[in-house]
Image (cartoon, rainbow over all chains, first blue to last red; front, side):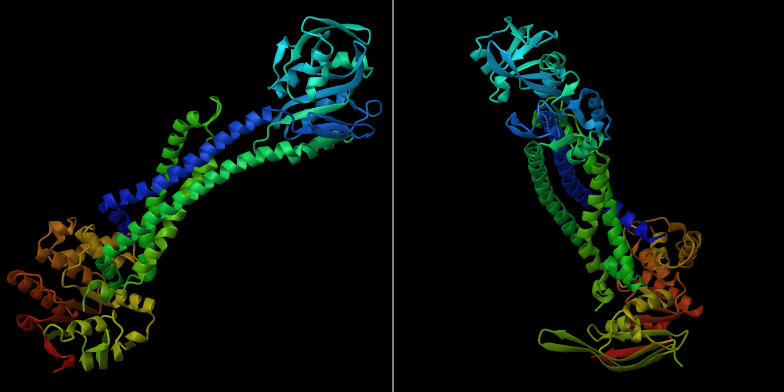
Length: 386
Length: 221
């Protein structure tokens, strides 16, 4: 027989108390696992959706002759006529280490054009990528399909009295208005969107790109790393993270995390109190038993080992069951709490090992004083021999 | 030199503003192989004396020497080790651990000894056979009679072959038949060379022992 046999036998004898202790700690761990998993899953969901709404990295030429802004975000100064990015270099963007985080790369060519005798800003885009990035766009009419189709901003269409199906001439080429954007409240309202190749041709900028918008999936947000990686691939370009977008995303996620950690802290404190009170009660009930141990020569450390081993075993069980029940609860709760139905439950190995580790740590810490108290029992007092 | 030498032993307890003098200058010598009874009325100080002799209760004054070792000059953990290696205890209410079998209860003192598991089991079984309970090794305490529980407690006390066996009112919770059987067992153990120091208030137990020390009001009379 060894010391652990005493712990195991005692746990077997006090099934009801140990079950209460296990359940107490298990509920705490399950709550934490549920909160952390829900937060993580919801954060991922929100993060994914936010990532889909617009670019968070801008790639521009280094030359700075003309100030302009785009989408309410300052792009610095861009020269239309001088240095520009070569289209062939765009493939390099997808070669970066964090290429999995890239959701969309939308190259644009910008230039002034004349439409119905008025100056407009013509933007050449890859419509597939652009629509992926700007999911808030609502098009009256159709998406442009062929190279000779264009999309007008709402203000442009109103000003020039154009509607879907009309034909216009830009740079001597006849183009069909496939659709008109519903009002976005952004600068897009005043633009004319054409296919990239067509716009390059109309503006005389074949193979050239004025700026590139990149939408990066930002869960875990290596946005800074991605900026550096892209800058290394495109040394002639200026790569900038749109900080306000990144920061607002991080702030939202951070608020979720802080809330869940706060609740988790309270729950684990209550769990540790349950362990403390139960272990203290158990030690006091076992005064005689501990007195016998001490009388027959058990050292203080032996007594502590017996008590702490019991606590560790119970906590281990509580951690494992707490993790499983927490994940079960998260699975049930996620569809009700996440914004999108496609939100996926995050099975994180770190949460699994962390919850078991946390349970054992809390169990041991909360049992430390009861164990010390037991080890300090005077054998004569314990035996009430006097 | 005696196995146990006690000189000018005093023990005071504080009880509120009052000081209770449980022992007032006790001097005793106990030889190897003796069977000693310490007798006295309730509150005479006999159990206090036993707990001090057993290395469980620091005296207020005086000295306890066992086999040449000044017991209370040892540190707390050294004293625990000394108890484990040299003393065996039989308690008044048996104090068996309820969730351990008879064999496991007997093995308790060996739990902390550096001995292989198989040898521990053998030693426990031998001790149980010695007290006539070899066939009930796997029973829990609540499956044993009072007399049998007392014998398991004795087996636990002798399993590590202690130099001294201390017993505190070992027949206090037994009927006369079981009391006689237990006292006869102590006598047998003593005949085999075991030093036994027993506290009792039952004068009938003295017939089994070599010598009786009477205590009254904390003094040997």
